[in-house]
Amino acid sequence: MRKTILSVAIIIWVAVGISAATIFIYAALNLPVPDRISGLPGYHIVSGGGRVYLINEESFPVEGVLDIHINGTYHSIIVKLHDGRDLNVRQYDYENADGFDMRADGDEIVITAAQWRFSLSSFFGFGINPRLEIDMPNAYMGNISFISSSGSITIENDAAWNDTILNTRSGNIRVNGYLTGDSIKIESSSGNLTVAGFLTGGAVDVSSSTGNVRLNGDITGSAVKISSASGSVRVAGSINCDDLDVSSMSGSVNINSAFAADGVVLKSRTGSIDSLEVRAINITIESASGSQASGLLKADENIRLTATSGRIKADTASSKQHYIRTTSGSIRIGELSGTGDVESSSGTIRTG
Picture 1 (cartoon, one colour):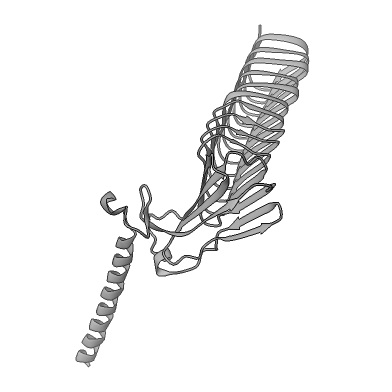
Picture 2 (picture 1 turned 90 degrees about the vertical axis):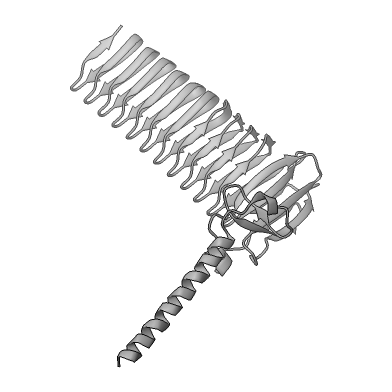
């Protein structure tokens, strides 16, 4: 009886040992390898990660094309503009991964990466970043969309397209240059959004559900909307538009300067709101549990500043009508012009 139990135990431990060795071998195959072998054919070394294989590479002429849609599924998307005439697409992926699918229909090109499928190389793909590398012709000026379910999107240099959509569910989006077009929509469900250069479009919409928004250049458009559900929003440049709406549910809002032909709305539920200069016909700043600090606020018609449990501070607030109220915080306005109400339920009020 004891010999039987001992034999079973030995078999179990041997099986465990073989499984552990298998896992180690497949993990080792995907860990970083020396640069000296990175020139070997068949695979490519990614920065900070493991081995990915060049699965597919194709080129497509874009003359006469009005719409290009690229869906990366679980792949990151890296876009570089070049002076050539063709759209070049390279897919780096797990060994034996399915290649992307391309469909050309008249004036439209649709490129879709294959869905993730289980394999030993994909399951043990530690440090690997599957991606699509896109070489986009500078001459292309049509509509474009880049979508990824679980990968990042990076635009490496300046880009000018018609209608532009950058969308990822669980990855960061970064534009390293400027981006112009008739309309621009940049959206991530759970990633940070960063634009290094300026944004110019008829309608500009930048939003993240659970990430920070960093816009470092000037923004110009008819309607500009910037939002984050659980992250901060910071705009370092100047905003020029007809209507501006900036909001954060649980993060701070920081605006350098904003000039709107119609209205400006700045909102934060659980964060502070800071602005250096805001000019518009109507200005509304609302914070629930955060303070407000403004430099110059100048409205042709109305200024409305409200806070539930935070202080309100402005160097100058100039308008025809104003309504300034906080429930449990102080109010301090250096220079206040126009007529209206200034109220605080449980805090001091100081103007002038």
